[in-house]
Image 1 (cartoon, helix red, strand yellow):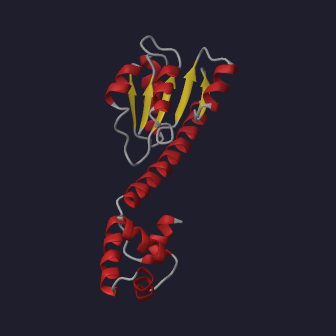
Image 2: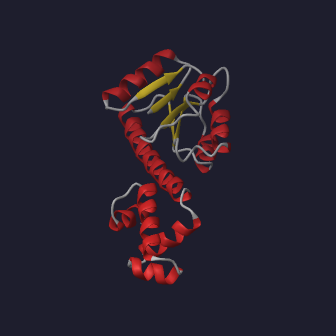
Image 3: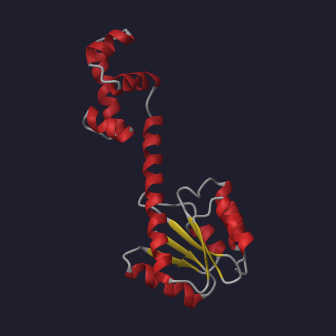
Length: 194
């Protein structure tokens, strides 16, 4: 989802239309506070991106960006700044602190949407990696030991011998690992964790 935060109705609506014409799901927010209240807490696994105007009446875009950085959300929510009043030091500082890009108004809409698509792909990758890490965190300490030996190519009998447990217990742990990691085979598991 592309979130567009800009206090100019015409620009916000045209950006929503442009994004949708490129097959990008988009929604506009008339103020930074509305975005923070309604959307900032619930990003989906399909990827998100934020087009953020720098100068707005309630909270400026840099302050919103600072909040997102403080909450550790910029990997999952790449930020592209839009401004009619930007300067080089502001752009450089934003990019150094993790902004995805910085566009001055007027801008090339197609170039902007190309960067949005790149940001959305990055967000999807970050979301997928976070989901895998969450699944890994759900494994018990023993399941992690079994997982490491499975990934090393060890057969159940060897795993059982190395850990001093029965083969049946290894099979149960293996089934739990596959279930929690949402895979069906060791090959699929290895591919997920590479």
